[in-house]
Amino acid sequence: MSSFLVGRRAHLAAWLGLCASGALAAPAACLYPEYTFDEPEPSGSAGSSASGDGAEDCANGADDDGDGLVDCADPACGDFVCTTAVPEGWSGYFALFDGEPAMDPGCPAGFTAGPPFVGNRGLSAPPAACACSCGPAQGQECGPLKISVSDSPCGASWECAWDLKPISGWKAGECAGPDGVFGGGVACEPGGACDATPEAHPCVASVTVEVIAATGGSCAPGPVQMQRQDPTWTRLGRACVAAERTGEGCNLGRVCAPRPAAPFEDGLCIAKEGDNACPPGAYTEKHVFFTGIEDTRSCDDDCACGEPSSGTCPTMVTLYSDTQTNTCETPLVALSTGECEDLTGNPSIVGRMAMSPGTPTGGACIPSGGTAAGAARGASPRTFCCQG
Image 1 (cartoon, rainbow, N blue to C red):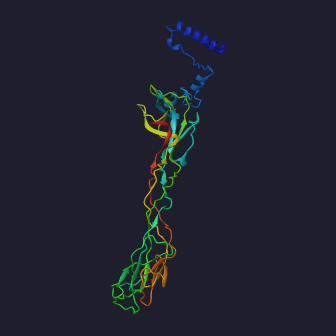
Image 2 (image 1 turned 30 degrees about the vertical axis):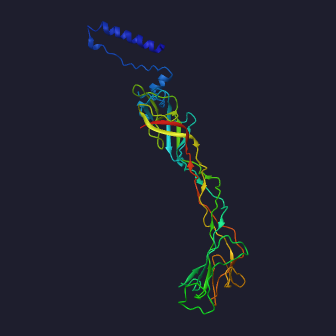
Image 3 (image 1 turned 180 degrees about the horizontal axis):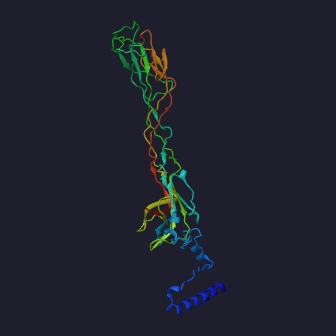
C-alpha cells in the first residue's frame, strides 16, 4: 500500500476519534470529508477481462471482453454454437459440404485445423457393353439351280409359266436337261397353250434364272468385345476440420464450437471410418463418401452363332434350244443367276449348262450371348453424421 494511502487512512482514523468523543455533546457537528480511492488493479489477464479491453476468444473458456459472458453465452460469439461432445469411437468436429463437384467451396475459416477429407458419392457406372460377332460362314453348299420360263416379257404379268426341273450338284461344263419347254416356230400370241409338251407349242417369251441359295454350314463365334465407360461421381464430399480447442458458455455436457455456414451442412458433423450407423443422440443425418472405386464390370464369354443365312452361289448359265433332252449344242442365251432375259421367236429351252458355277458367298450368322456381368461400387467408405 502506498505511503500516501497510509497517511490518508491515519488522518481518517484521527477524525473518527474526534467525532466519537464529541458525539454525545454535539452529534450534528461531526461531518465526514469525501475521499476517493483509485488504487490500480493488478496487471495480467484478470485485469484485462475486467477492463473490457480484450476481444472475445470464443474457444478459451474466459470472459475476454469483460461483459460477464463467456464464449457461446456471449453475443460476440455468434459464429459458434453449443453442441454435444463427440461420441466415443468417432472424431470431430467437421464442417461438411455435400454437393456438386463443380461447387466445391474449399474450407472456411475456423475449419482449417487439419487436412480436409475429400470423397465422393453417387457413382455413375453403366454396365459394360458386350458385343459378340461371328466369322464368315464355312462349309455351305449351293442349292439346286432353278429356271423359270413364261409367256410374257420380263417384269410383265404372265398367263403361263413353267419351272424347269431343278438340277443339283452341277459341275462346270456339264450339260443337263432331262426336261424342257418346247416352244416351236409359231408366233407368240396371247392365250397360247400352257401345256409344255412338243405337241402343244407353248408361247416362250422370257426366261429367268433364280438366285441359288447357299445351305448348311456354320460360323465360328469370335471373342466377346467389351466397352466400359469410365465411372463418374455425381456428388462431392468435403469435410473441413474444426480446431480441437472448444469453449464454454453452454449447459452441462455441451461445448462451444464453430458454427458451419452455407454451403456446408447446417450442423456440425462427426466421422468414422467405414459405413456405419449414426450413434444415438444429436448426430442423426448420415452421409457416406468413398475415396476409391471397386470396378468388376465385365462380359461373360458366352458368344454363340446361329445358322448361316443369306448366302448365295453366283453362277453363269447358258441355255440351249436343242429339242433333244440333255443336248447342249445350239446356244440360245447366257445369263447369271438372278437375271431375266426376253426371248424372241418362241424358242424351245431344254439343254442347260452351268458355265462357271460359283462358291457360296455372303453367308452370315446372327450372334448371341455376351452377357454383362459385375458392377462398379464405391470403396473405402467414411461415414459422417451431422446434426439435423
